[in-house]
Length: 404
Image (cartoon, rainbow, N blue to C red):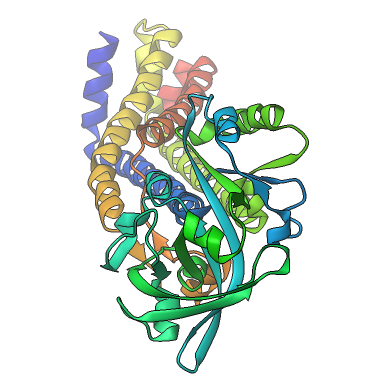
């Protein structure tokens, strides 16, 4: 009986019902879209800088990160890798030797970071081969380089051109050589795109007079949320001679930026929820004020106040539920579209993002938890506001209500 009365009451005043549903629909749509963009943007930032190069965790010799020189490298052997690879949550381990040097073509010279890496393991960890926009990938023993697209543009280099590298090797040895360019790589991060140069690991070690030496081991993991536990496990395995750092410690500026943006998002979301709450409450207030005579009459003919209160609560929840479902259906195509076709920001905002070291690309994240969470929050808000008619009905005087 209460269910039938609830449904009929909703459509007895179609305009009021449709206005309330529309406000809930818009609120759910906006909340889902905001959180999808927030998660998508942050995932993209981490992907650009962490997955594209740094890895989620890095292992160095103790003190290397504070003084990044070749003399702080460590000896590489299979037993070291065995210590690290025992954890099933680790996706891959990439050995690297890194140093800053000068790259020259003709009369043009630019500073860059040389990365000596195992081509196969690097590709498994960061998908480097898929980032090649011109030329082809190199092999383990090939005497050739891969160069980042931005750096290639500054040096006016193309595939099969020759680049001259010179700098300081291990223990102050002179390092100078020339290599052909095998491929040009594009990175999402402008900082990486303007400064990276890759050599096969054995060639880089020979070039730097640092045979079997490494500056870092980049560790990829299957589930990013397990990063703190994996880091602690690696710290206990490696001992005090090594430092094990996660990407937040390696790049505190980006981690702080994400944290600050996350805080501002919660403020905006809180304001949105307040607007939703006031919108629903305003409608409920209007509904109870307009229906005083009806409430008084129903109580006078024998309807219990608790039953009347339940009916009003069900009306509120049903309107909200219909609005939530409609909001979900409308938001789905938008989220999927912006996941496949991200927004690209230009102008000064893009420059600000580039200063942090990543491209100004704003994708949306398709995540079921976002849709469920936002829907439940709106439903809880509606339930709490729906308690007001219960209180109002419990204090109503049927005689006075029918006189109004």
